[in-house]
Length: 240
Figure (cartoon, rainbow, N blue to C red):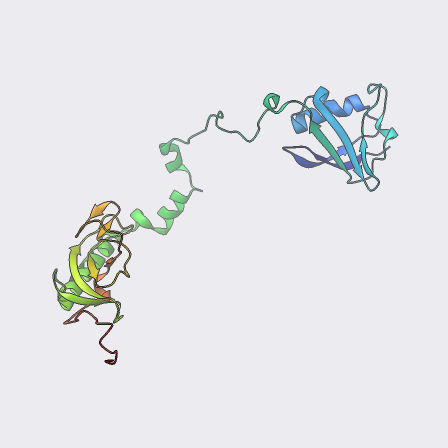
């Protein structure tokens, strides 16, 4: 008889395999061990068909052939490991597998790596204009600070939003902000509508620790210096 394609399914594997009907059950078990990792003596086999699950077992497995079972193409052959959980091999645990790390000098020689692609495209540290671009961004922030008259102690509003008024408490670099090249402006807002309490990444730039978030760090172009008084929410209420 011709081989029959079946789906072999176990706890850790699922694959299509061709099964020869002339095999005995014992032969099938031995063939399944390298596929599933389950020893023949610990395998509980069943064939899932339209009529239900049919156990593949016999008193004499060395003399019982698979022709005794309804092997339908693409039926599911389930392999259950009957060993106690502690005795099974955990194939998903890679903690004991030695990791291979490609030496840096070998990686730099490769022509199909991300590093090689960055070199070819002149990106990141391979961009010959990178230093000048960084300096240009730093200079642009400094120019905005001078042009806008940004100084510690001055009143301002942030982002053009009239309800975000406050006092400038810090002007300079903030290393705790990712990609923070250039100057930032730290503003203590009048209302607790900020992002922090004057500290960021564990470093305090002004004030004392507080649960109220009056602080915000923004780029100079978002700060508008002016005589912005503290808003009085009761100002527009009629007298009673």
